[in-house]
Image 1: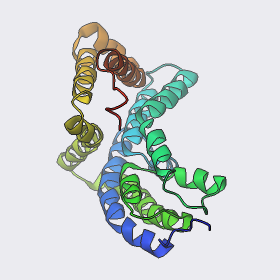
Image 2 (image 1 turned 30 degrees about the vertical axis):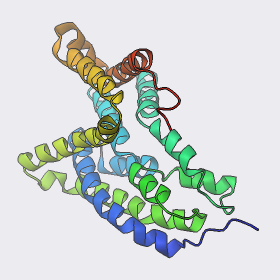
Image 3 (image 1 turned 120 degrees about the vertical axis):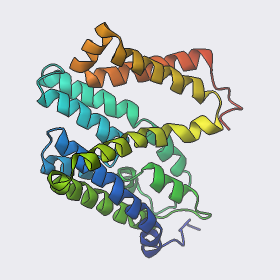
Length: 250
């Protein structure tokens, strides 16, 4: 007997409404910030429609902004920075997708797995994996649909209205975007004591790159590379000093 999920596309749409509403405000902040960094509104929208990753898009906007300002190296160097930055920041989606793949039903062919993997975000994953039954392609498409529209709509709205907002509002939106990074690292930090020192190491390295004269000059020219260095060094130190045993990962 085939494993077919009872969850429908309509149920997916319903479950995706709260996520879509949340994405509207966050993507509005991203759109406004992207334009303030010199990125055209249409390109900010294109970023949201092809990435769907808040922290990754913010990091990408920083790299692109540096490139537009004439720093960060040539075109090839900037592209490599973008690729490596996105790979490192979004690597968690590999684990989410693997975990989610254990809950899908028989309607999930390879084609549908590839299509739905694009829409796996932290919030969509959390809602999908918490379902008590298996997940079908119809439900997953419904769950992704409204958040995707909300993310794109919020981005273009923020980008178009950014010029009408006072500087105080723009500053507040910029802080909201950086809070997305904190939202990613805070939950595992609270539940796993081995994550805390790794986060602190990464934050400490970032401060060194920002405040030390020699390193700060390098940072101003290579924003994307600094993200990569801090993430890799902190991860390596964490793996060596605070290894996760097999029983800890269960």
